Structures are given as C-alpha cells and as structure tokens.
Image (cartoon, rainbow, N blue to C red; front, top):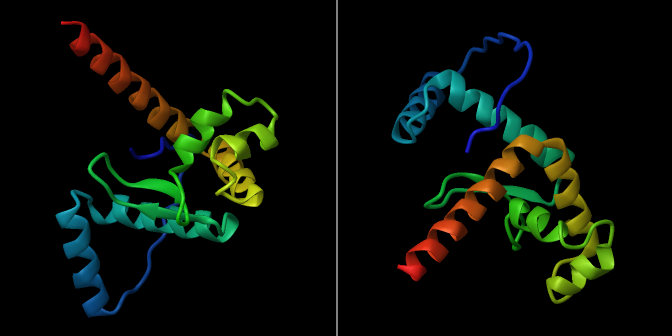
Amino acid sequence: MTPAYHGLMAIVSARLADWLDRELRAFWSAHGEDPSTGLRRVAEEWWAMQRFPGIEFRDGPSGRRASLREGPDVWEVAMVAQAYPGDLEGLSEHFGGLIPRDALTEALAYAEHFKHEIGDWIAENERVGRDLVARAKR
C-alpha cells in the first residue's frame, strides 16, 4: 500500500551514474513502479528510517510495509494498541515482553506520522477477517 500524498510536491532532479540509473529503472520496472514513484518511495523510506531508526521496510505477498526490526509490522502494533489506549505496559505484555518498549513507542510514533498508510493496512486486515468469517459460515 502506497501512502497518500496530500498537498504540493516538490520536483527534484538528480544526476545518477549510468549503472545506478539502469539498476534502479530495472528494479522499479520489476516492481511495477515508474522512476518518479520509485524514487519518491525510496526517499520516503530513507527519511522514515532516519527519523525512526527501529523501523525497516519489508516486501511480502501483501506488499511493502513498515516493520519493527526483527518484530511485527507497524500496522500490527498499531492495531493491537487500539485495545490498550495509552497503556504501554499492557501493549508490551500483549507481545509477551519480547519487543522493547522503546520499539513499541517508535512503532506508534511512525503509525501516528503515517496515519493513512497504517489505517489502510488495519482496514485491509479487518476486511480479510470479515471475509474469512463469512466463508466459514457458508
């Protein structure tokens, strides 16, 4: 899921070595992205990893998503946190104490900054859950 862009966007141009241009274009093409979309995603992910150092990005069958390093996806932390409003201790206990509290705090900060993206992931998870329940009842 690609985050929604609101407001104005700056146009930036850059010179790249020929080999890097070829590699990036091949990668983006293989992933269904044009250079503008691919470069915007790369820049946004770089910024996010600088601002939230415990966050990384993973590809998977459902798409590319923000995750805690060696932990769950950010949307999963945010979804579970809805059951523990303002209760970091309860959230930590939910994950068996296996995820450091600072990592949970960072995931929640990322989720707050990228509300639309994380909300889309949670909504999709809920939709799939409803579909599975409906199929089981048939």
